[in-house]
Length: 310
Image (cartoon, rainbow, N blue to C red; front, side, top):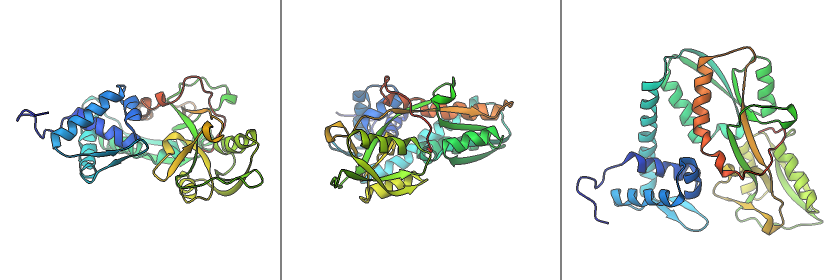
């Protein structure tokens, strides 16, 4: 397609936002769900952006999507442009806020670059706010809320507690193993890399293998999702994690390899009892906006998980 001289090379914000979404979410389909548009529309955005800059930005095959060298250069600028646009929007529309806010996040979601950028933008837009973030297990975060040591916490829903809070995030759980790992069942045993107890990911992995007639043997345990991912990638064992934790070097296992389907996890916000903070409410709204587009990746009829360390 021949571009008009007025548009050639121009970095359109919508195209950059689509490009960033594809990189952050790891696939055209996931980016489309986040942006609430069709995968074909996202693919067209990437094609148009590549035409604008006259560079190939992504290498794609049926199993992988990776940035080219030119894509690696552009994505840094694209993120800054998209973030600055959001920051300007927030700066113009947000009320003046000040004071402390203590936020609790599950460890496996706290390290997401997208969420980190949301928190950084919130701090820049509201320089008089003193933001403190605590990443830990959901059951610990709920305990900190009850003890008034956090103002706001995002945690796994606990169905047994009879919660009626709004779901702000929903995601499938999947089995994961190292990309080059060859599973060999010896005496019906499989090695597992697991979070420490209590953890629904741990329980689902152990119980799921039992359903298949296998016995899971714990060979690695940690409180950190990064260390679990590294252990699995190195071939020490397999694990159960949220779908978004699938990264290069890991592959998903499914029913075609004998592994049972897993439930979705759902997240909800908890507020400190007896407190109503405008700062906490604005922060909750920003995080909810960021997470809102991702929950559509889950199937609507799967059940929520129970208590977790995540």
